[in-house]
Picture 1 (cartoon, rainbow, N blue to C red):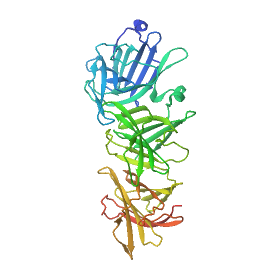
Picture 2: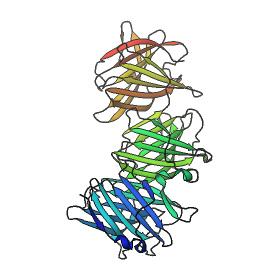
Picture 3: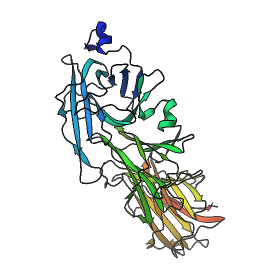
Length: 505
């Protein structure tokens, strides 16, 4: 049974600023659990806001200053145990941490000037509804005025009415007030602007392109190039509770433009960094902040075990430290962490290149090899998909069969890390010596994962590294060895092995 607290009788609705219908609405939560409705009341300078959240506890809407340091908090709900609605008018101040991207907020402070009017509060399983009214600009020092143009908005909800209960989900978005021909003001949350505003605001209802970058299915990239603007919108959906990162890489693989961000659900704020990254042989230097901030944060949230980050930038910013988007295939790196700490090690990472060639090496169908020679770079990307929980190995063998360059690796699912070894192997009649580590590490690990009983290992190397201990790829047929184990232990015996010929190009 729905229990409703009515703030004003219907006969007083017009003079009190209460409306029967709110004509504007937007879903703030990517999981569909936090709907915001609103209406600016003509000639009054007031706005009515209604929250509909799929939650049994409190709901919260934060109107944030443009610098992100202060928020005006609308906090309330309906206590169905004792049958009453509640509303709080709070303010919130942020304190930056000593490490960039860290920080905390002070406890919310009650606003002595109560500028919010509770119009209705209710709970009907599974939804809490809270409707309030306030002035666009209250004149109160502790309130954040609504203004024209883009504004940041925070949201959160809990399954408990206890004021100190931790939120179940929270997020961050932007909204933009718009004036229409009939002079009515109308708010649209920038997380998904109406199509009429898509070109000018650079945010779209739907991103029509998507690709799963992680073989384990944990890093989905969506995007849309906005016609006539030279801009692109990118959205990351990662099954992670910490930061996410997308690296736009130069074709030679030596430089990356880094989009790094996420949503800190402990302190309820979204964050975004624009970095650049330079590679040296086998490793990369620490990211360098880009002085020209060419990335715009459009929304950040964490809900249903998923961090969502949506940003906009120009296809070609003209910034020396940014990598332009171009037509055709581009190398892309990705990673994510289960921590928001900037120095936290990634939980998983990879680099994407479309692999158009494949061959099943195992007659039993348990060892699939995919590959792509990257035009103009002299590099090849190799991906092994083996039906095993342990290590996998690919041997690039000399034509006389006496020597092999060994790619050995896998994903340790017990301790959640990928591993890769670059070894060489010499054959004697009827047997081979133990593998020898190659001092010149010419393999680059792009992705490692274990999912659905399959270990996936993706690496990149040069067709001809120039290393004495590496076997160059050449045109035509080449002898290839393969093996895999049921264990990640390096000394475990292979479960299956074989020898085939492959023509790479």
